[in-house]
Length: 370
Image 1 (tube, one colour):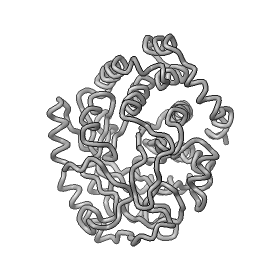
Image 2 (cartoon, rainbow, N blue to C red; image 1 turned 90 degrees about the vertical axis):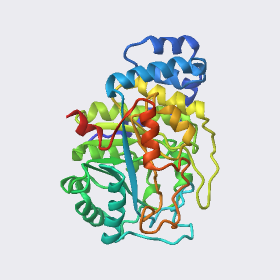
Image 3 (cartoon, one colour; image 1 turned 90 degrees about the horizontal axis):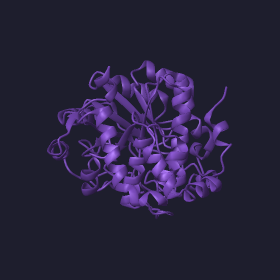
């Protein structure tokens, strides 16, 4: 059966980047004026030529977001189940080569974390693990889903890529959505950052959303880790991936996340810096490309940045995040996957959103539109 790899292989990284940088002011104005925008318009909107039009993009993005999502924004919480990992990834605190204490939550510890998260009002949870198939494989995920499915309306996971039949099993056990980030779509650079472990298989990871779509998952989250390679090219390939999936698996919903490289144990400095204005430009460009796609912002970003971006296209936001297993109630001092930047409490973030005229939604969008 066909997959995104076939589409992806018809593009060349350097040619794509050159095409983006060759966009002109007239290309940007045409993109802004179009009622429906294609991938060439998206290239123009993420190009340097669009910089003088950032305010126009922001205003249009705000209008389109309110048209589709109203004055609401979803809040969610990540819960790290394990930091055990069999991969070597140059940018991650959980990388196998980092000499850190490893921990995988027991049933009792999972329920203790759940109780804390529920006490904050959350009805949508994101479960995260490192990639260690023997200790945190499909059976562990099924057990975790069955433990907590009665506590939340929606459960999303961000774990190792799995086979189609394994996703089908998890869906049968209450799985609602899966986040899977390609990290970078630059094949050669990807190999440099993932030298060992199952994650080193670029094509298997690239085809994960195809397996999810075939399994019938309700929602798929995409994204690249900005800082590994040029953010414009990685963003274009993320958009290309999104459009392919929407056409192929049209019953599935989609979201985009915007993680920038953050400090961690054994740290990697960004190869290419993505500035705050760059990130605003990209978020607005995605909204102008697609009115329906959900755009998510994590606590990797600063308090000031998150305060300013919530009215410009973002539809979901995390708060009070802990990136270490047991970080809420079980083992608050264990090592984090990466440092968060916005350390405000759930209540403080909710109050900030309300002060900006936004209504906080505590479960996934799908449940609010059906």
